Image (tube, each protein chain N blue to C red):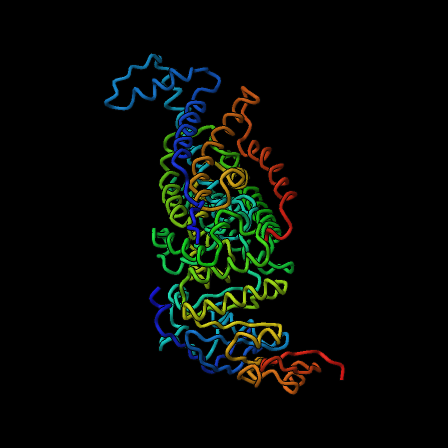
Length: 262
Length: 349
């Protein structure tokens, strides 16, 4: 809990990810502080998901990832998980597991391997469920929930993990526009209230311009452009890196990306 | 905001424990009573209780009936309890770490590996020490489970539930063939090995119980202590890592414990299949998928199941006995097909 309230900053310096002989992510550097939301955009195969997986410790990486001057790659899985939580693009939903138990998995990093959850862990789980309005679902099977409810449950698991940095891989890709908005608003409120640093990937360019503070446009494993939505979402950038012809409309200072044929 | 009243569904309600205790006691009584010489449950209970110091209960059994209970049936029942609980809990543990509901010591080739290991030891050393059989079986089972896992992982179809089982079937076939070859080349020892393969529950004595018990007790304790970890495995390796679980280390410990326990059981009773599938799956239907319920209940009902299978084995075609592995396979194979047919698309990775 305390880590959430502390000011945390993460420095990523020259991060590279190699799978076999292929370099998937190359020389990525950026910095994020609690309360910020950085969104990674880019065409398919740009290395967005791999970058998140490297930060989460799923993929091995070269370069430096430092959180408050700790070298993240030298920490154990458990200590690392206390700093960083990860929500997968398509989370594995264990058959038959109910919402309460699923969210309580977030407490794993705070338990010794052979210990079982304490009263505190149970309270924490209850607290998070109530906070996200999931109390009524606690006894339901996760597999029986709708897409939007499921996404809230996976976010609840990340919150139960109580890590100051949360990685979200395409948090809205499986949702309709209503649920998309609901989930994004939720993430936006949480990062401000709880001082969480959020790093997400996102497919929809217009949506990516709404809440995040900064966008990183990745292509071919490298960050090509970084900055605010108006700086990154330009007709030229999107033509260069997506090969797509678009027009940028201005919606009260917010860029709207519209495909066009000329 | 409404307060959540739900709690975890991973704990076993106290009443269930009571039911478990009743089930085990009843199973022991039935296992002892049923047989060529009929002994009533009441007499059996009195005879058993009369040996508990401080109770001062007098048994009315004559000496030969008492001998049947103490030298023949009781050790056999206890051995079936121990071996059954080990096979069922090993099955649950493999299912959890491999995230594969079809994993079973027999289907993964673990039992065949244990069989080959023990056979090699019988053949190579003239008369090996009894305690060392489980060790040789253990080494064989480790080779088998590593082969199966490596093959199942690297298969073209990807790591699906069926590719692991297919790999297991292939490994089991290979190792069984190797075992047959070893036996053929050493025909003078075939009888000894063959008797052992068919299962020795029929001639079980207290020495068998003493030989297998330490291995099973230690392995079961290890597996039980990892029951929460097995629930974390349910979200898959990638997410489990980000939750803070040292996936590879935890999996290694669980597989070692499950394989050592299986090997010890196989070293005493021979190959008994499907217990690790039938028992955990029946429990899943009633108690849900959490390993925190599944594992303790597998320990209890694996034992109960094997005692009943043994009762069937020795009474169905009385006076001759059916090998117990035949009984479990007759129940287990259709059960396996049922799971295969009824599994939901996408529920297995």
